[in-house]
Image (cartoon, rainbow, N blue to C red):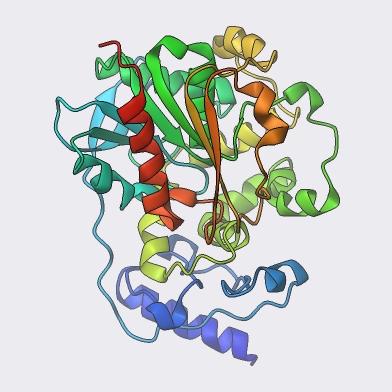
Amino acid sequence: MTDAIQHRRRFLLAAAGTAGALLTTQAAANTGAASAASAGAAGVTGATSAHAAAARTGRNKPLAPPTRPTAPLPLLPVQQVQTDTLDIGYHEAGPADGRPLILLHGFPYDIHSYAEVAPMLAKQGYRVLVPYLRGHGTTRFLDDATPRAGQQAAIGQDLIDFMDALHIPEAVLAGYDWGGRAACVMAALKPSRVVGLVSVNSYLIQDIAKAALPAPAKVEAGFWYQFYFLTERGRAGLTANRDDIARIMWEGNSPSWHFDGPTFLRTAQAFQNPDYVDVVIHSYRHRLGHADGFPDYAAQEAKLAALPAIRVPTITMDGIDDGVIAATDGSASAARFSGTRKHLRIPGAGHNLPQEAPQAFADAVAELARTGKWRT
């Protein structure tokens, strides 16, 4: 029996004995842990957090078992609000009459990307709202017949609907990955309701007409999951191994982030949403031109196809250690921002920038909130 299998068996026994909440400490940092839902899956090796080079060359180590039990991290409290389409779960912090800031998570992550950012901003007197995206956490579709769309116009419309349901006329929007895309979509389509925008990896509206054009090979390698999800094998894999896929992505996306088991398991609960697989699969198939969009979003997608410029005040950010989208100086996307725009490069941070560099992210959001032209 190999050491890797022995390690894996010890890990599974410990996890099962504590309902999936036994977690690694810093000594086992950055290994993550599979949840009970994926405990029967084969062991998955991943890159250690210490060196991005090891991740690229495939010199992976077997998962280490937990060294001692620890209590699970506290969950952010969540409340619900209904739109015409969704019952959206969201965390709220800060005074109810504060200037609203909406923080949006990516895939495969959840609202706990902002577990440190939200209280930082709430302490400054802002009303901070952190919704679960469709297909994640406690967000649910109201009608079983509603298509489980994951296309960019859908997540952008969800954000508009979320603000309408809470009677929020305008807000500062901030996000990364899917959340950054939703914020960019709203900033482009509804600029009168956006006081400012913080977007990790700059302009995130997808140019679907050019989806078939290849990126450099090194970039394509980081997008392995996107191509995997184009296949039915990928759908079955995401269904069966959603936690393992997410953990491998975390390690590749943020090779210098020393996340631990409690951190991963807290977020992995969000992947048990019944619509998670359908929404994720449609998202990647649509963006790569392998699935049609749904009629309800046709008008928005037509506008987005023109790659409209974002004219609201914007701060864009890149994590220098981003393992999937390389940090830039921002010049390549400059033409997509017709308003004031500042670009920041954040050392020591990867793709999940608000969780890896919370102070830098909170500072950027607060800057726009302070200097923005609030109309209401």
